[in-house]
Length: 508
Image (cartoon, rainbow, N blue to C red):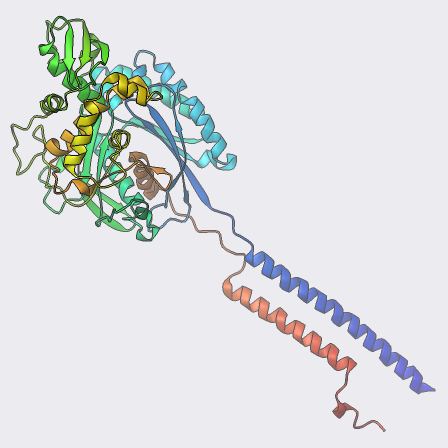
């Protein structure tokens, strides 16, 4: 009678073991899946943001950048994610109404608040760099310039960002940061980015030179293989683990707007009864200009003629050759105390390598359809001359959507660019095709602001990237452990339900 009782006890014991093993198996499967899911889930992006305001002579633009917190060779991999053009003129135009300078920035800064995540706004640095327009205002009236900067600072401090300062950057800085931008976009710092492939037929050298043309100044910057005889034109950078020594110079008063003023001021002596026949405007074009306004610029004030009429009636004649002569007259190439100069006695080593030309260079040449393919210098000259010879009514009819001020000045601007590059800097038909006119590459504007951010990130500490909860060894160990545990449970259950024949030998 004891045998059935023993069998019953054994069956009960087996049932408890099976339940225990089943529960352990389920727990093991859950643990295995949970570890795999948690360890392999997508890691959050550790992104930093920065804002740079380019306060130029004609307008202000707000650029928003982002980069991974874990930097590459101590320099952030920065890319532009948004741009906003401030309505109205540049901040230097508000010298008599400085409060309006700050107010003009509000709309674009509110847009920046929408782009950058709220939780990261407090740590997002904001910089404003004012260029040649403010340099000229400071020369004219330093108090006005300070009041404008103060107004801008007050506005930027009112936003929930980490305001780092507003200042007038030097021409050398503007040129150098533009050089950094161009070489970053062309892939010369991180070659596997391959961004230069977006520019047809462009094979960059080790680095590419930068040509920047604004409204009030122009910059030339490149890495020279020759000695830089003027130390004020020499700069040193360290980016992506490599050092660079470059030549740079900024010509204040030689941006296209101030150059046009220079050309007109030089021609006033030829005016008859307040009428100035100007070959740099299309025939049939007319505009009135105040000589008081013309001479108000420190670039032009030294050219004031006491007998100049108060108002000029400027009438275009559309003569490229005469315009070229007038433009060349604003460059002084009569003296040079160095082995080689560009113009106005400024040292410049011989041109080396390829060059990227941007800002007004691009906008003007793009209008003239001279940016899309390689063209000889003679062909480019023919195109500009053909545009200058067109009647103004015909030009207006073909381009009704372009503002008259800009449209009327393309003849002068095209002529000026050709002479600045050839007569001023020394480009020729042999190396003309080393120049590429650049607007945007991979959604980033060519300009000094991106280079400014790249250089700025050298001062921002790198952070460790987000990593999975477990180390690779810990993750592998746990996965192996739970896998073996599951195999053991399955094997134990199999042995419990199906005993091998060897275990039946002792049974009669």
